[in-house]
Length: 163
Image 1 (cartoon, rainbow, N blue to C red):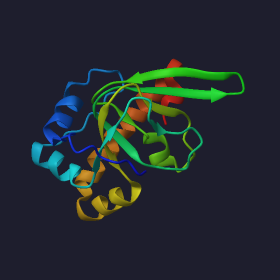
Image 2 (image 1 turned 60 degrees about the horizontal axis):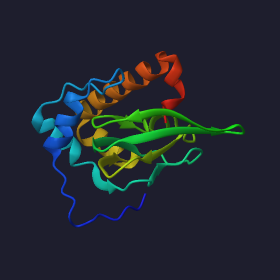
Image 3 (image 1 turned 90 degrees about the horizontal axis):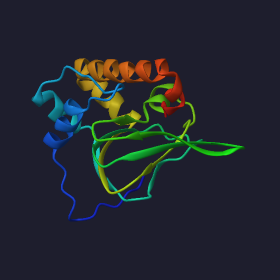
């Protein structure tokens, strides 16, 4: 995961919090975190800018990075021998990469930026560091992500979007 950051792109934790709390999708992340806890969580994350058409996640890759979408939209695609199928469009406040983050399995789908966007990533190494230093915060995030996975798996048409 090596993304270059355009100097003109500014990241703001409050914009990420707003996107997550205003996300009304069926699979929205719900975490009972205070503003201070969000700020602490973000200190374990890395912001980066995604450009239109840039591949964020490649189906079959072994990367386990988790992403939170501050702004922009992402398109999720699954490929098999019959071709590519669009599975979902993810909007601001969405989470992506949760399946591989927990399962250590290859990515089940590809994710591409449909336009410019701002994302925050959390690697398994940084999550482990957070779990050691801030166990209650890590547990609340893990429970929220578990909820996202459960909702996505119970929604039959979008099951494979657990990336």
